[in-house]
Length: 280
Image 1 (cartoon, rainbow, N blue to C red):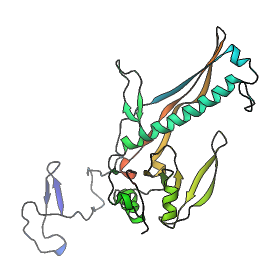
Image 2 (image 1 turned 120 degrees about the vertical axis):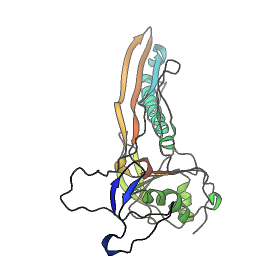
Image 3 (image 1 turned 180 degrees about the horizontal axis):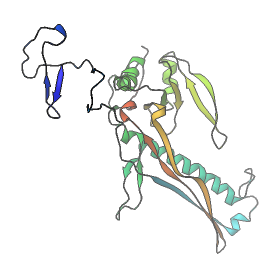
Image 4 (image 1 turned 90 degrees about the vertical axis):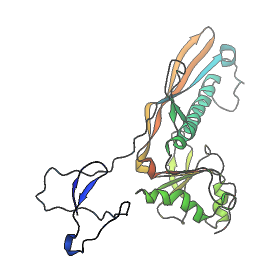
């Protein structure tokens, strides 16, 4: 029985507790913590808590500039088939580019604090944040099996007390699932803000996990997430900021500002470097 803690690494113990036989213990011998209990009247005890791992993050601004000359804006055939003026057409393209860039940064951003030398602050992406369960050279990479995926992506999360609920995968995994004999069942997840259907699948090889193919991920990459501990923090929502006209040019900015937030990074995993698969 532990009776006192004399330092951060030293405790006092009472042997022969609960009618057991007192035994000598040599230095370095393993001790097993079975749990703690109290009389119900103890005061000033040391509290025990599991705090989330804290990771420094930076908010990133993604911006696209739109500029269309007056001659092009007045040309009716410039964007034939789009049903919009050249200026509106280019803004739509800028919106697409901003969203795509933001998603790439959420995956692969390296993280950079704004300084006098580098004034562009950049967020850390999942690959940089997930350091505990980050596998870049998986065993059996060329003949990867479902058991390998469970070993690399899911087991480390469970071992650290997490519960994965979402698997992001590169597009090539849709073929890999077919090789494994796991037909993805499409779920109705609605559409995004631009009306594009959201691809969401369920694959019955690991219960409770949905699968989303992500074109932003490099081939041979999967990311397992516990969704309630991973979110996007938007500081400034996607917006179009007209500049008006300068000379005969129509100008505007399209931007978004935010970062991805991960609590308990050991409850998520990143696996890359898979080059081929084989049946189980």
